[in-house]
Amino acid sequence: MKEKLVRDYIPRIIKEDGRNPQWRVAEPQEVLGLLIDKLGEEIDELIKSESKEERKAEAGDVLEVTRSIFKLFDVSLADSVVAAHNKRTARGGFDKRIVLTLNEETK
Image 1 (tube, helix red, strand yellow):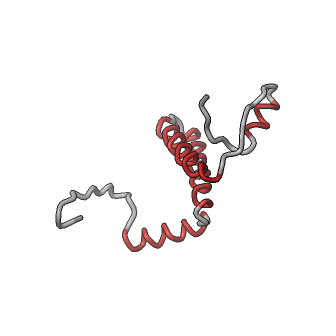
Image 2 (cartoon, one colour):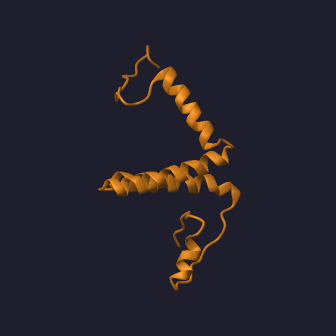
Image 3 (tube, rainbow, N blue to C red):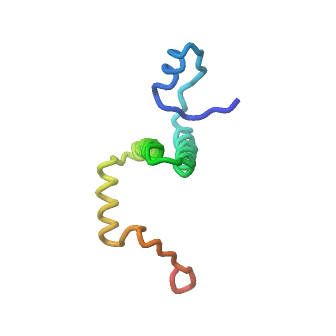
C-alpha cells in the first residue's frame, strides 16, 4: 500500500465526495522524510506545469511544503526571507546562472 503526505483537509474533502479515505497521523520521526518526498513531488509538478496559473499553484505547493520543513527546524518563513536577503546581498543570487568549475583552488 502506497502512502503519501497530504494537506490537512484532504481526508474531509474525500469524505464529502462520498468516498471513505483511509489515513493515519505520521509519527514525529517520519515527518521530515515524508515532507522531503512531498517537496520532490511538488517540484516535479512545478517543472511539468504548462501555464502560468498552474505554475503559480504548484509554486504555492512548494512554498507550503517548504514552510512545513522550516517549522520542523523552528525557523519562520519571515526569518528565512531575511536570511535569504542577507545572503543575496552579501553573496548574490543565482540569476546569472554561474557554474563554478571545481578544482583544488576552488574547493
